[in-house]
Image (cartoon, rainbow, N blue to C red; front, top):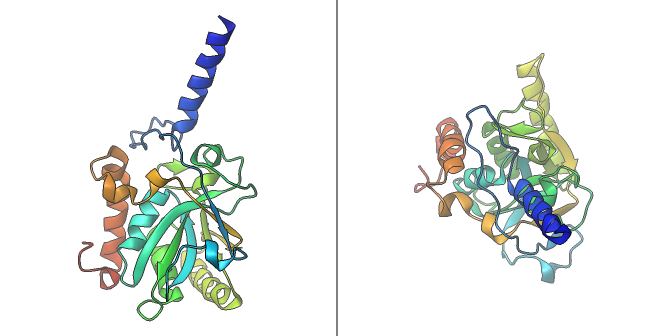
Length: 235
């Protein structure tokens, strides 16, 4: 009997950790429970080139602003962006998983890695996309997704990128006063690729409740702000 009770407790705990966000009572749709995860692999600025995804001739950058399903869809709709990968960054633990990061104890936020053609779009424009696609004053979350794992972080990899971000944040803060930009500005350290089933989630699950109720409206709201940046087949 004790063994069965232990299995039952582990099963219940597993179900509770599988939700992408805590159940809410506000009427906002929530994400479906997670499936069994695939082991992740880490990427950092110090990772040998042979272990990195092969994207010849492309630059890369990293952002976090709420649900990575949403942010991936936003950036994949932008001209010059060749691929977006969902993952985790900004924390202090190795090999984070969806389940562990969702507790908040890893310090990681849901993040994306953007591969882009710098001859078509530059980093400054990607920063414009970043701030145009979120509620820039919402701390620790976006929309119905709340918690440190959904916080906004804009990562820089060199002094030039930091200067671009700092100038943009300063201008936004002046326009927003007395409110301020909630996003953290952080030097990039490590990106952990998320489980396979998170990749291209919006494209693969267009009828899922969260996608229809939260992700698609967020995408369309962004596209209406900067229509000149949108790929021809993304409207």
